[in-house]
Amino acid sequence: MSEKKIKNIFVNGPIEPAFIANSIAKHNSKTAIGGHSIFMGQVRKDDIKGKFVAAIAYTAYEDLALEKMHQIREEIFEKYPLNCMHIYHSLGTVKTGEICLFVFTSSAHRKPAMAACSEVVDRLKAELPIWGKEIFEDETHQWKENI
Image (tube, rainbow, N blue to C red; front, side, top):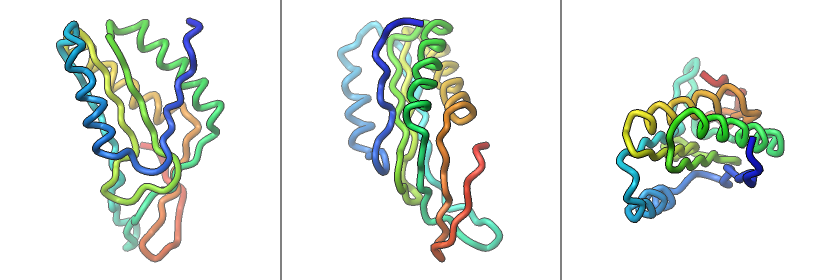
């Protein structure tokens, strides 16, 4: 694994649409890129046994999550010919309709960008110690399962 600096993927609260738009706009000068893939996770207003989700409160074992994300990131760069990869995950409370995860991969061609983006999302959800507490409209809660 390389000696690259571990990047902080965490954002307090929701990931704002303007932040996402700005991240995308910064890539118009990177002319070796021919394809981007973007995944945005949004908090759903799920109906669970007659109660509606109003928000998710995200917590993480941050140091371990950042180390693991660094490892995943390095493995993805080794596996796919990417030009760049950006990953952001919310901590704290994110209301329904707001963005909690933003993954953005870029490559000379679309297929590696798309495959890498999908793999990053799958591995992040399966391997990182990040938990979501679903908060219902009546202010009760339950811990969310990552599926």
